[in-house]
Length: 203
Image 1 (cartoon, rainbow, N blue to C red):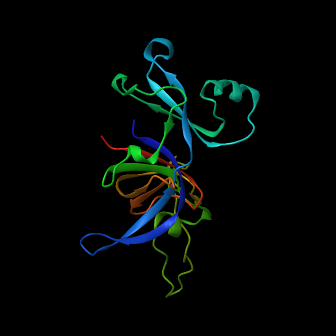
Image 2 (image 1 turned 90 degrees about the vertical axis):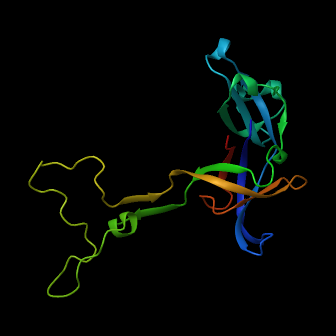
Image 3 (image 1 turned 180 degrees about the vertical axis):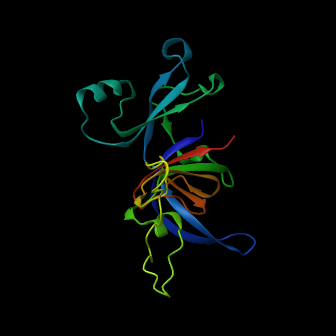
């Protein structure tokens, strides 16, 4: 099961063996422990629950849930697995070395929130003309005033921009620092610094 919970630190650049400069996103991998194993007979599906980012206090229901792992996580994620991947036990710790350099991974995180934005910034609309009496510079234009007397769901209009769950596929593992629990990925990872990132190995 090649999946980790990480925290985005920032970006840097490295020079590869061909002398080409690569942009690298550095991710910190906090301590994370298997808190629960689910199986087909009892739960109806096979999955592994992993907790990360240890805290000193939890609610009573949650502390009872993770008692068997002897770990108090702030974040709990569940991953579906096959029966052949169930070689983990409750309390096992996951480390960055489950990945190798040059592995391909998918990264999921929430993108940066940019607040309320107009149609030009949000949907790349063109602005109106600024000559010959034109007054509609940044307006969205007609949204259907005659038919069908309502606005279709999904109409491109002004609204909240960003803060959406985004997955970037096929990023390459650039380096792994097991001692400092760091992973470097070639390319950009969505989200601001200190945001939670899910790293998933590609089959």
